Length: 243
Image (cartoon, rainbow, N blue to C red; front, top):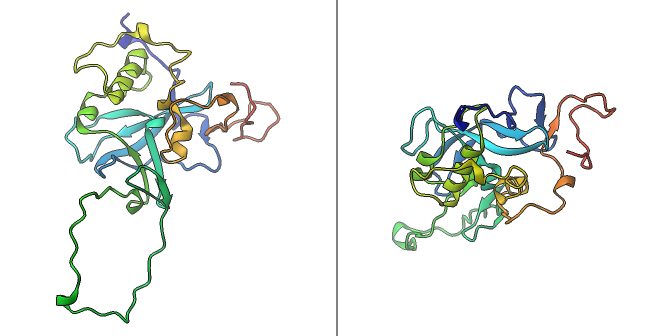
């Protein structure tokens, strides 16, 4: 049986599962997704996560109503480490750092200009889209060509070839039509990559090149809804659990 015909269910959708977002983290399903130029990419349809490690691996993004020219009714997977979450309280600076939105200066009514006295300024040429203008929004660095080349998401069919294709599209490796071989997929190492750093996502874009060394002790972003008789409250997960 060909690889693309097999059923892969090692990653599952959050919606309809026995899991939920851990307390204190936002449920971003339904949030707008835009690129760094402010173009609408789509919206977060769901999250795809590993129930064994209890870590989110991908955002499922629905491309309906996108500003770019792509196939209709297409959904794509975006590795969580390549997305930045904004909640309307932070803005994106030109040096890729984030900082708290400054207070608005009050209007000085003692200074009144006539039309001829209003000083003129050169129009800004270095404008960068400000996610704070949108409130709750997820930002990913992606262009139209990448959206076209990314494989169409199919539930229970996210196998090695699909995941490798996604990585190559976002890294800019492999020509159009490049055939991906599953033989280069190492299931024990694949997710030890900055593409899957949840800390990047929840810290709003402070990207790292590798996952923290204490990965097993990190706070999990997805927690079990149902306690399976282990004596803890439902909906919680100890940071020191073995996964």
